[in-house]
Image 1 (cartoon, rainbow, N blue to C red):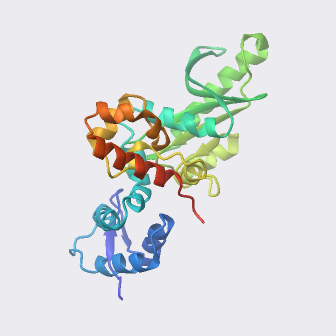
Image 2: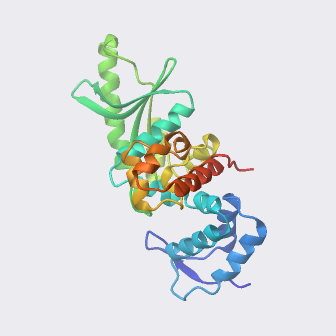
Image 3: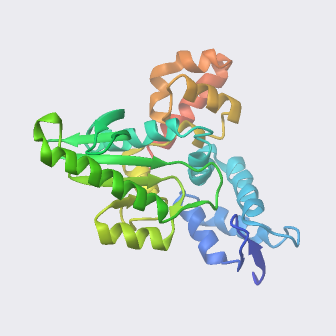
Length: 281
């Protein structure tokens, strides 16, 4: 098969379509080899004007036909984008990631600095370890958090740290600053953060402990992953505080309140449970 054609990325850049990269993305969501090859062959028949969005939508439809759980896993990157439009659901989601790692979480805390007070998205505490966490949410693929973000967070961290050294009794000392985004940081942002000791967490960084790997490790799939729910139903669940698939089975009342029938509720609960069982080999 020949796959020598260019595609347009979400950022507007053109790149040569990499069929092996595409196959790996299908393999990561657990698709069997036979299905992967079938979808790859069909890609050749797509219209001449190709974008990553078109290819994603086509693959998602094919996976949905085969198994809704495979579609949900493939849908993960888009699912994080749909946690908006405000950044608060993403903050709740990040809090769940830290909870799963044994941290006690406080949302939207006001912490005194030397010059001014600061509102922090999250504070994560485990024993004597205290982390200041800032969440940067984007609702469109292709948008990246640039170096201005860690520059800004470094200034805030230094102001808070200075206040603590002058008056250690006023609260916990923060030992680390961490910034996370649902998309990616620019190379310059990564370089600066590494230089000044700020930890970053995004879709592909760090390589062995990035967002998708943590989501898979702790089965923290957002409800926006489920293709068996409409976007409207997903948003209504988030408004009711149901952010994760693992929370669905214990909160069937929420599914009922968003208008799902008993049969639909059982279908969604079953898919959510199957999804949460999935781990990568």
